[in-house]
Amino acid sequence: MIDRGDVDMRVRLLGMELKNPVIAASGTFGFGREYAEYINLSELGGISVKGLTLEPRAGNAPPRIAEAPSGAINSVGLQNPGVRAFIRDELPFLRAVKGLAVIANVAGGGLDDYRESVGILSGSDVDAIELNISCPNVKCGGMSFGADEESVTEIVSYVRPVCSKPLIVKLTPNVADIAPIARAAQAAGADAVSLINTLLAMKIDVRTRRPVLANNTGGLSGPAVRPVAVRMVWEAARAVTVPVIGMGGVSSGEDAVEFMLAGASAVMVGTANFIEPDACAGVAAGIRDYCAAYGVRSAGELTGAVRPWP
Image 1 (cartoon, rainbow, N blue to C red):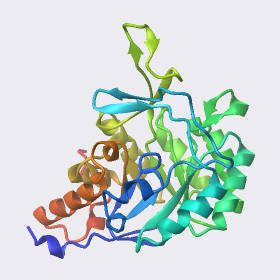
Image 2 (image 1 turned 180 degrees about the vertical axis):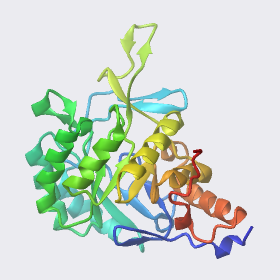
Image 3 (image 1 turned 60 degrees about the vertical axis):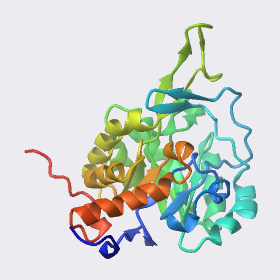
Image 4 (image 1 turned 120 degrees about the vertical axis):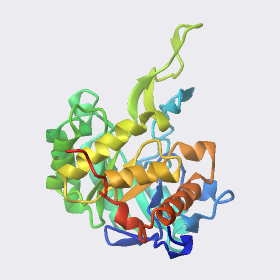
């Protein structure tokens, strides 16, 4: 055991020094402004902002979020003001927060949308870009861009030449084997991978016999997905040499430590923010408590320190 104050919480990620390994996950923290009255944003290592598209999107029709056992199912549909409005109206506020890493999460309906959005954001003051490749690929009949190695290679290779920022590729868990998908992302130019995105899910109201969500299906997040997420982070970390950012049901310091032991260099906190607005700060404090209790002097020492059975 060591004193809490002796724990170095800083981690290095893609040339950035994060004050701690906790990043607010995209889609659960808005643009930071929404949570600023509940939490000191400078306590975070970073924020991955609400998913951005080239043009503004109103999102899906309601209802678009439903409670599930140990989690939530959502089909918000990427409601956002568009990349240009983000740079003009939201980014200056975030840049005023001392020491906060700002990651722009990008989605799109086609390759050209992704490429143009990434190009625009590369000329802005964001620290990194997170490419959400779990969006429907119209050319492939609605299948996710990240559902196979070929599509991952295609989209990452297409945006890489216009991306001057560190490029994080966010992987979908809705695949049979995550390792070749992660390797394809790295080979095509990803500087890091983040995972997992939500698992496809559905909830039906047995009284009306209708799906609870107007979109019929949605993405499951929260503690229910954590064991799946930890397994996939472990598999991805063993498959690639670039950093891995883990997420999926993190709500405590020990949850975050589990992801880091599996191979994550940093963690993202998502659904927990809906329950406790200061969840990110609590997770960071919990990591510090764990390190102090087990004599770990630097949070970065946790990454990949799992001891699997032979």
